[in-house]
Structure formats: structure tokens, C-alpha cells
Amino acid sequence: MKHFRVVFKPDDKEISIHSGATLLEAARQAGIILTTPCGGKGTCGKCTLHLFPEGTPILACQHHVENDLTVMVSPQSRFYAHKILDHGLALGAQVRPTIHRRYAGVAGPAGILGVAVDIGTTTVVANLLDMTDGRCLATQAVLNPQIRFGDDVISRIHFARSPERLAEIRRVILDCVNELIHGLCRQAAIAASSIYEACIVGNTTMNHIFLGYPVEQLGQAPYRAHCVDARDISPVEPGLDMYPEGNVHCIANIAGFVGADTTAVALAVDMDFIQDRTLVVDIGTNGEIVLGDRDILYAASCAAGPALEGARIKHGSRAADGAIEAVVVNGDVDLDVIGSAPPRSICGSGLIDAVAVLLDLGVVDATGRFADGGALGPTLPAPIASRLCQSDGQPAFRLSGDDRTGHPGVILTQRDIREVQLAKAAILAGIRILMGKLGLADSDIDRVLLAGAFGNYIRPASAVRIGLLPNVPLDRIQSVGNAAATGAQMSLISEECRERAARLARKIQYVEIAHERGFSDFFAEAMMLSP
Image (cartoon, rainbow, N blue to C red):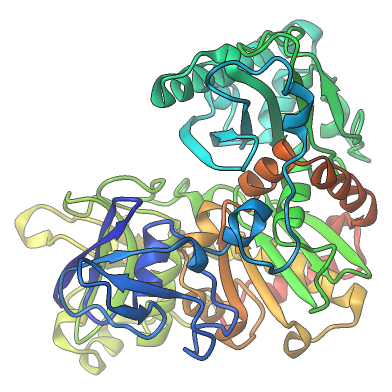
């Protein structure tokens, strides 16, 4: 199958995607979030792009990629474009920049700037904003250097049990935030003293470490937070390099394992205004779930483990050059690979696709077991049958490479399938328990919003096919990108958004799913690879 180059302007993001994919899929792969209230049916016209340089309007959800393309993305087509009142459309909940007024009398020549920071367990993202109009002026992102203390929050909680070690792990993240601030300043050619406000989000553990709160109790039942309230502190106390008379705002947490990042997601997607029954899923090492509408909201955290981020997968990796990010079948297996490198690993979105493809081909059954290769081989197209192989005495499937040349490439093993089952079962079991709280069946869910970097790249059809998500019509599922970072930006510039976030954190009811009656039954059922 042919692949084509698509360039998105003014972002100047370029991706390679297989023939026949829609521009909506291409935009998702490029990390660009388009608004599609009709679910990609082509009826609302909201995802209109313009072919470059002619300016011909096209619908991203309907236009299939059959040649190299350059397209222009207008602010009106972006999912979050309506958020800032000064920028335009009177849709949904609007953000009125107000906090800049505090600094009107001391502003320097660079204006009044602020930084929004999303401290993830794996990645830390910082955005520099003009606080008068919400424009993003620069972005920086790095791996969270706390990884050296452990890949997950439990490892870091265990490390930080003493005051001395808490101070050590805290210093690491504070230094990281300062490095990001310096990078933003270089990128925007401004002085750090022009940054007057910072807004910080993260899960409860990341929040506590940033603030220097004790974390030992987060690792022990009943897993209570030291404090869930929003907090404002002087930048001098943590030693952040910004205007010393400014302010650092930390958004409120919800519970011990559902933190300020989930509050920020709920704010960004307007959970306090939504009338539809909406499921929000932020998939990472811990999957956070919010379900409900403006009247009642439940949240839970699911210990999905790191498999969907590439860990514990034989050839797994995070999204990086050479990682398989999409898998399709057209007579043979075809791969979309990040960057120009040959395939050398598989990231989470590609992993979900690959399992869905193996299910459709009959290579793997609903229990996750590989079918007998000898019996299955004659029923498959020859190119696909040739990909059946063995790894350490167990059945496997070759996505790339060729054993005959001594280069086995990227393979998916029986153990890999089991790791995917465990991760997706944790998430789906949590969703099912929250659905039970509201008495909802799959068909009762009006919208499914996929948040976070991983949620942005997975294909909804594959997620439903393997049973990672409830079996809802695909046009009800939308990726909303890094909504936690968006919520942080909204709270950075708006007092009203800070108040909304605090109300949401108090309103959302936390459910400890592992303690819920029937959890083990839900989990066992969710191990099945079926819608």
C-alpha cells in the first residue's frame, strides 16, 4: 500500500500515512485536534481545512489521502479554538482572561506572560501564554526526570517516604520545571522575569511532590491525599525562575489517585456544562475515567500498567522515530511508522491496531490465544500466513522484517497479547463499574472523549474492536488531545476557570474500583478481546 506525505500549516507538522486514510486520521496522527461534533459524518462542516496553496475548502473527515498534500488548519476548525473569548466563536464555555489585570501596573515590555505546566508521570509539558489573550507563544516538553526513581507513582511514593528523599525527588522536578521555563524563554526571546503566573497540574502524587507534601499515605489504604484543595504559593518558595512577586497556582485534586490533571481534563471538556452522558478516558500507566453529565459525575483510576506505553512488550516503545503507530490490512499488513526510519518498535496506538487486526484475521481469538498456525495458515492470504512465526517457543506474528534474512524485525508475541489484555481489562472494568453507578448500558453513552497523548493517536475502531472501550457507535468517539494541558492553560489566565476547577474537584465523586463489589468479575469479563 502506498504512503503519502501530509503537511499541516501553520503548525508545519508533517506525517506519512497510508493511502485511503482520511485527513481527520492524518490530523490525529499529527497531534492536531479538530472539532467534529457530527462524529465525522460530514454533516456539520466544522472540520473544514483548506488545500494549500489554492485555498480549496475540504472536510477533513471526508477527504481521503491519495497523494501528497499540504493543508491549512484554521482556528475555527480546532477543537479548543472557541475557548478563549477574545479569539472568537460564541460556543460552549468561554474563557475570559482576567488574571493579567493583577499585573497591569508592573508589566514590562514583553507583556504579561504565564506558564502552564502538566507534570505527567512520564512526560512534563510546559506552555508559555500571553495572559491577556491566551495565545500560546512557545511549548517545551521533556521526559519526567523522576523516572530514575521508578516508572510509576507507587515506586516514587515508596522512594519518597522519608523527608530527605521527598526533598530530593522534589528538587528534581523543580529543576525540571525551571529548565522548561528557560527553554520557553529562549524560544520566545523573553526574560524569565516577564513570567508572572504559573499553573501546575498533575496526578495527586506529582502534585504532592511538587508542593513538598508527604506522600507515604498515598501508597497505603485508604490512599488518602494530604490535601486535595487548590493552592497558591509564591514562586520564591519552590525556587521557580519567574517574576518573584508573582504566583504559582496548583489546581485542586479529586482524591488520592485522581488528581489535578483529571480536574483539568474535566474543565477543558466542559463536564460542568455537558448535558450528554459523557465518558472521558485518559489512558496512561494509570487510566483516569470520568463519567456522567453536569448533574452527577463519577471518577476512578485504573492501574493499567505500562504496556500501552510500550513497556513489557517485546518490541514495545514510546512514540518515537521508527515506532509503528498504525496497522492496517489490504491483502497484507501495512504499517504507518513515525518518522522516516524503518520500523524498529511498536508504540501503544500501533499495539491496539495490531491486536485488532489479528482478531479480524482470526490469528488470535477472543480469549487472546493464538490459533494453531498449521491449521490457520491455508485460510490466510499467503503474505499474511508467512508472518506467522515462533518466539521463545511461543506463537507470534511478524509485523516487519524477515527471519530468512536474519532480521526478525518487529514481532507481536503471545505474551504481548496477554499484557494488552491485562491493561485493557483494568480500564474497561473501571468503566463498567462507573456505568453501573449510573445504571448505563453501552448504548446510553452519548459521547466518549479520549484524552492524553495516547488517546489522541489510537483509532477508535480498533479500541472498540478489542474491548478497550464500550461498544458505542464510532461517531460518538472523539480524541481531545492533551486536555489536561488545555485545562491548565485555561486556569492560568482565568479566575473563573480556577473557580470552576475547584467546584468540579468537589463535585466529582471518586470510586475506589478495586474495593467495589464484583470488581473481579468485571475484570475477568473485560479480559475478553471483543466489543
